[in-house]
Length: 200
Image (cartoon, rainbow, N blue to C red):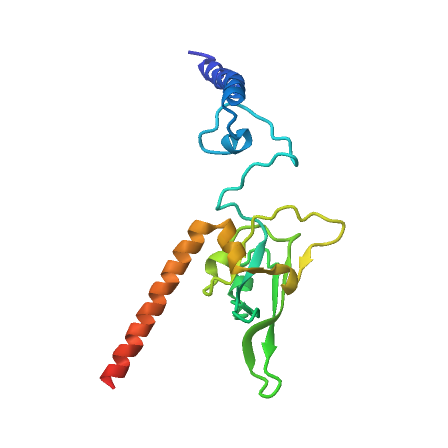
C-alpha cells in the first residue's frame, strides 16, 4: 500500500510522544531518578535533559580524550606504566600523539619512561586505537569531555596522568578483567620460573 511506511513512521513518533507523558506521570508517583532512567536501556518516550544541571550518565564504554595511567607506590611516588615504546603514536590515525623518550645521561641508552608525552586534543578523533594497542595498559580513554577553552588543547604528560584508581572508578568491569588477566599472566610466569629453577 502506498504511504504505509509514512504511516508506520508517524505511528512510532506518536507512540514516543505519548510515552513521554506516561513516564512523567509514573515519575510523579514513584519518584525514581528520571534522568538515570531516560539514559538507560529501558528508556521510553522522548525527553530533554536540562544540561548542565541534569546530566545523562555515561556508559562504561563511553570514550573521549586518552589519558596516561600511573600506579601509586606505597611511598606516594607515581609509577607511570608507559614505557615510551611508541606503538600508540604509530597506530594513531590523525597522528596527534608525540612522545619524547628518556635517555640515561651516563650511557646515552633509552630508559623505559617518557620524558614528555603530548596529545593534541583538537586533532584527536577519540577512536581508542592507542588504548587498544598499548601492550602495557598504560593509556586509556577518559570520560571527561568538557575540555573546551580559549586556547589550543595540547595536553602534556602532567595533564594526561591519572591514577589506576581513577580508571577503576570510571571503568570497573574493564579494570577487573584486565587485573584478572594480569594476575593470570604473572602466575604463569612465576610457575615457569619455578619450573626452570627445579630443572636446573
